[in-house]
Image (cartoon, rainbow, N blue to C red; front, top):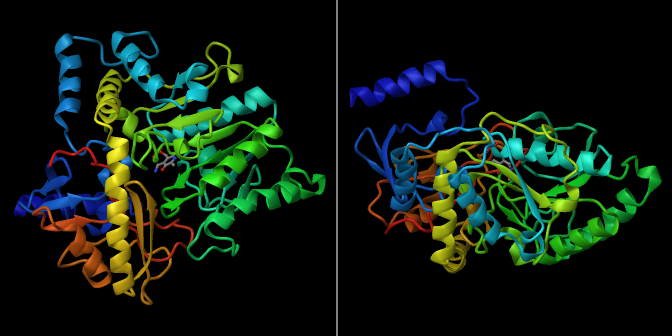
Length: 429
Ligand code: PMP
């Protein structure tokens, strides 16, 4: 109605053009449950945005709401910086039991600012302090956040402090070594980069990797590649940082994506779903890296009790209900069906993913690289470009499908758009 139009008009007039989702989705969400969002216009949408991967249990899952209410009703303080509380104790107990076994018993944790990017910065600071070195190695197409260090490590920046090495990918691999052959890549680059004094890349303080690249276009890396990466970094005493901000909490079909390869990283950067849809970020690392002195790392919002309670409920629910396995099962079914559609529709260039972290790459002669192609049924680009995939997803009585575009104007030349039915694998219904 008029209120809906008014809100949309006011928001587009006053918010920065940097906004992504709001630019082309004429939706004003007023209610949400599970996989479904209801707009002020009364229409229902299947939410494939999934809060950018924060909603492991979908919107407003009862166990999450109950956990939040419990904290509020108990009269507990909502922010107490880094003081010990029963809420934090419960969160850490639950978090630690999920960690890869090689890290679990020797894990240290530091709560960071509220976002994933804060935990990335903390990881960089930590390994710099621990190694006495400064440089970082990240991978082509990576996304680690929007603060300075994390930005440098992301694919779009060109800062010399971060060296970028090729990430293995199948589809349109710029290095011609896609898929499992990508496991050969590290051998090439260690010789030419890490072990070559002429390369201009000094031994780095750390290597940061997404086991499945998210914003870069949903690109899973072969397990053999991750294992090789682990060997190479271990042999040179370079801390390996796994950025599981987006891949964590069951989404890829294992609790953490590194569990697929069995690799134990030295440092894990965790955020998004660990807060059960509220802001929470931690860096977890092996105790011998803990060179930090008191006060070496801070962040006003590192004591967010509501997020910890929502996170505890989410982590426990995923574990108790074996939702990682469910994501694996549903994901492989979905990949199979999407691949059938890909064979039918030339507009689908590639279907890839792991568990329910799935990407559909649409190719269209008319779509420009960097065109985010947001769409809503009946009106947006989605109908023209992806009729088949849309039909396949649109089976829950929803009247539309929200599709996650590429990372926006700095999408690093990734053509087309992608779909990320990210979370909600534990959603009701
Ligand atoms: N790392 C990865 C892998 C991410 O996907 C993101 C967010 N998309 C971040 C870090 C940054 O998280 P935040 O937006 O909460 O700062």
